Image (cartoon, rainbow, N blue to C red):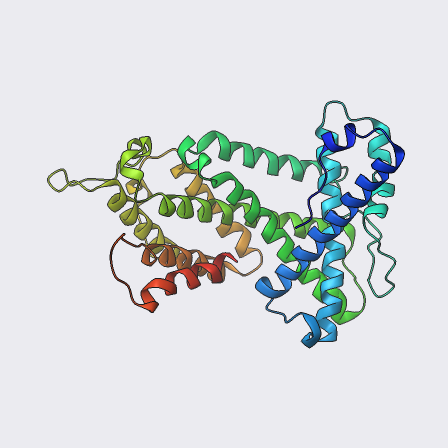
Length: 331
């Protein structure tokens, strides 16, 4: 795997040729990220065969997707450069030139956009919304879950769903040979996908982290956040409480009626309710509510049936079925 040189690597070099070498390494690493991400999405997300057996349309689809991915990453880099306190105007002004050096897009078969994709200059409110939502995740989630990677799961899912939308755009561009979506509409649809990705990320990250830590959770401070035990004569362990809670959420996602006041009072209960309501609104606008909520319910089910006890014996179906179901939904 090729790594992008650090800022310190560049600062510690004094000669012109060494700095040129570092820039060349940066370009190679960036191209590697684009190509590996494109291959990953072609194979795992879009189910396309790569290599010598790939269809011509798949090869072109891959190139078009990588181009859109580059355009999106350029806006991300520009946005974070704008956030830096010591950013000079000349750096921002030179971004298009730097970008063109890192990515060679002279392939005439690629349909080019005549606008910046999700530029922070014209979509600052949308970028601010994303940052505020991510910040709320860090402020709301218990430290134990943050240490186990809940935030990175949320961010990855947010961006991943956005890239799925770019994949749909790339496929449309390849199949039709042109692109009719204007800048405002494409950016609006991309933000819509990022919003869905964020709320999917909340649901996925909480379930995934809780399940990953369920065997050790009785010995952690998190037990204080999960008061869901109404029968004092038959107290449940924290892991049993979590399983009952996730079962309830699965029924809710599957369309069953449920009194929200019966949900356990945790720091992230309000966030989960907001996630449910927001996904309902966002998916209704695209007529994808049924599919989206079924996928979340399947994720919960696959997580729950994938629980294992150390030392127990399992057949192949018990070992792998939950894992395959989870991979189908999250990958």
